[in-house]
Image (tube, rainbow, N blue to C red):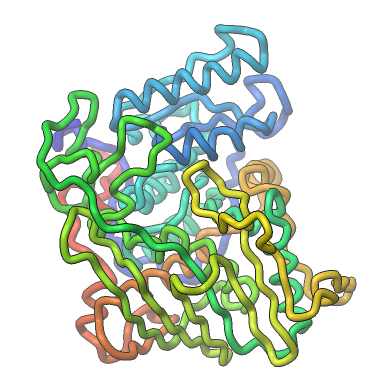
Length: 473
């Protein structure tokens, strides 16, 4: 796609910086697509477009969405032609097998997701793109009136995340983040752990310890020809132009982990990649879902050679206004440990990953749900106590909320706050000393260097600062 073509996109223009505020009420559009009024007829389904057809889409988002009769996946978009064609083939093959009809559906392919968003045949989108392509398509989908399922993390920067949350909430579309540890399939232990903590089963909570994996260094830095099937300029998006090499983008094997996951230009590494999952659970248990730390400090090791440059070994200490300290580090067991005055609870995924390449404990004897006293885990949550939002599965909850006009288990402001805590930790890895954060203003106090890292320059014409109006250029 040429820059000229991109400039002709028809979307509402942003004067995004702080224009909308954070207090917009969550509401659902009064215009509900006809898809919600039936169960199985193609004309009565939620028509979904899949943006990004890589590992997470084919290994997780599509298979989970296929399970639900309310959903009908009608379109795919990808800047890699091979992945786009593979997505179409996968979807059509699944429907053919389910219905016994080879021509049941003709999935429309888009080189540019903006054209998908302009289609009246699409009610909702699933965004399964690299991290640097999360906030912009989510904002544009909201402005186009499309409901959104967004893979985590929400954004590349805290400023992008604030823009996205404001626009999504103002639009009123139904938003769900792929923070699927909140849903009870396949991990009911996370909700139960948070309910036990919120209801005082370990006394007064004072510390949360989080363990995350971290990425290896390496990667082949040798410049390579850009594959003819890849729109590389579009793939780079708002980030600076750099030469192509396969380990910077994604492998030919659609199931392999892309090298971009290990490059700071496109993300922050595991502190956001897995951090959004576990810090989201910490916030749920701490009852801090709509705020953030007030202090954060961190140390981290970064590779000195090679293409891949995200953090390696690290340690983060964050303090919240409610007196709880959150410690995040690669030396901790992968999971979330809540420590209180009367005991502790530890929760993790165990050996159940989302995709085949996800890190798990690797120990079949490890406990996904543990406590200082086993009786804590079987404690009944009484009717008059705090009961947290119940969701059977993340995609199912999203579809149900579209149909019934409800807020999802992972709405956009909660998602933004989980991600921003991770991005604050990443900033603290770069800026020495203790940083003081104002959760309302979303600024560091008296630290110019840290505040500069709340945003990044965006390469025109891509980026949340350059979203176009509904007028032809």
